[in-house]
Length: 351
Picture 1 (cartoon, rainbow, N blue to C red):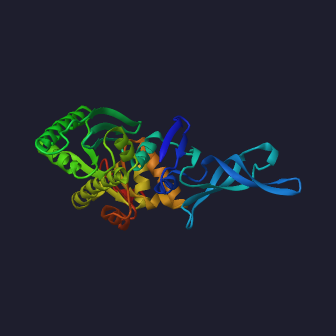
Picture 2: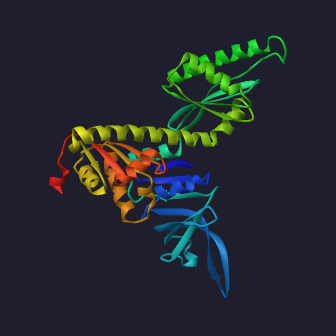
Picture 3: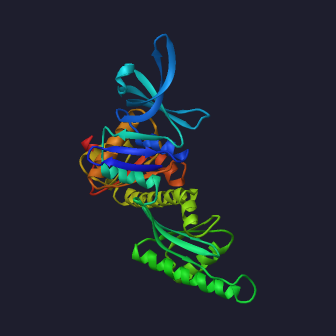
């Protein structure tokens, strides 16, 4: 998913769907009462003839649904803006969104800090990509603003025979040093190495010899250099990293939750009622919530969005956890959300 914030003050966002998974993410982002603008099509009467024609409409969202077997998200709502000559204002309309489509979203309830947390589900905030083969390599920094090429170079190796293995090891060890230098310069500890064949595994080994605290992922691509970086940028490994980070962060919050549950039960909250009360008095320091709480399109989602908005504004740490993971399953049993409080408070006496 590609997201561009058009108006940070008023919550105007352009969204492009690149993968089927993005439709699920979009469903988390869109809420009842938001405005969605998109190119769509609609049946209109032209004299005695009815024709379906393309037009740009803006609708006020009423509900969402996934269209079975078509991998499309249907956004139902009331038309608030469209071509005057067709008289569509005030009528019901459904915008169907699929891979390759773009929409403009006008958030009814807007929090820039909450969007930052949502973006962590969509793409990495900061990591290093390395694409290498026997001819060239490329190193890039990926952050929320996009990809920046940090270093790229041609590699000169003997075609085969004597000296090939020694030259290859020398080049890869030198590349490993450069990667560590880049990681230190940009304060990044997550690296994705990709290559054809097994060269990625050899580079990973040399990296681990000189820096033990890097999180290193590997993937297979067709080419090194810039072309390989572009290929890698769209691979599933990036979403896997985001998932791993989310699971790790949720695990840390769960460990602290369990510790405080035994040592100071008044420093934790769970289930929506308790968390709602805690967030309204600014008491939440860390909040972990499963994605299912945002995927429903009912009163639960409305309550959760208000909780997240207030928590973000109060600088609480927020982690949205995939529900099909071990931390997600545990949090689901606890009501779908848990919180670490800034101080001890007897919430049951305030209710």
